[in-house]
Length: 414
Image 1 (cartoon, helix red, strand yellow):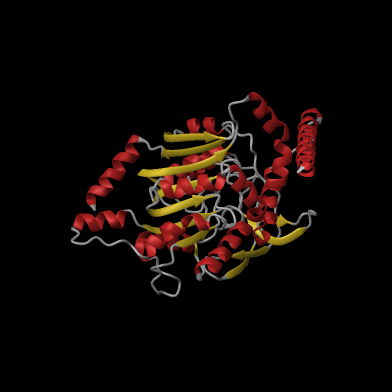
Image 2: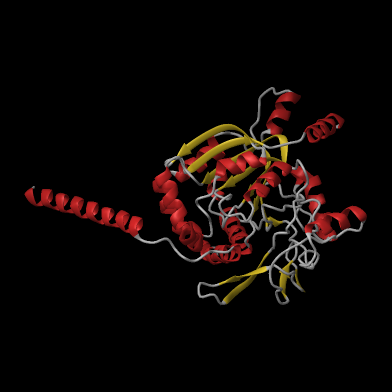
């Protein structure tokens, strides 16, 4: 018994000493002197997508911090997933397990004895018909598709990719010139401004299974391995430097836009490429950036974003795009990390943000509350954890009055 007591005392003292030394070392060490660009962050995501390395490295950390419980609470306990669901910044498929309940209900909807037409309509409205997992990183999307296949036994539908040729622009053109040219001409495929060096010809995946060789747009990125060498040659779509919504930017080819419209109009049918019914195939994937999504206005009932605002080039623009594609009576479900209440905690986040961005591709010191205000998001439920650095938010999308009137008139015509 005496030996056990000594072991416990020694272990406690050693743990206290190591923890104190670590904290003092962090406090006294100088902050990183390097800067991390958006390109480096995106390349890091492609590296972390290999064999789902991101999920494997963060699984234990999320469990200890209670993040997994918050994810389950947001997607299960809130009961707000219905109809078409969009998750932006979906990562490499680690979130699939949290959708199991809604996927099972979609494949086997509940029955009501002696139900009326109103009961059937309510069941239909609350049934999840499609879950679109969207991410800007091609490696993450490929990993998500593999996870869906391993977990559910089918290849998910992939929405048509960006038309990178149409997105190629002259970097000398300004945003004002783009607006003037767009207003003066009705020709499709107008080009916007985009920064970045030109990239050589690569292989571009089309919607479905086809692959075509095309010249990439300026500003397109390719994945690199940990040593900086070109690795998988996956294409990362650029962000067009424009304040316009995704439906007004030249994002898709004519055939891709036609397929997207067809997919959205099919709704619950969810027809596959071979023409067979996809009754139980709820998941689909899309390689789109959150700042510029080609989805139609008011096309989703619920939009989910879990730890994505820290990773976007323009988080305010991403929130506005989420609002645009979400129906006025829908919900935005957000689980984010950023600045907290304590100045000392925020100082720590600010000091080590470059190192964290270099390792994980995200800025953990962003002001989430400010982004929500700038985007006009209406918060209806909010909870904070970990000294205010983890934000649990249920919100309504921002809509203009004319948008609400148009949406209500479209519903009355049905």
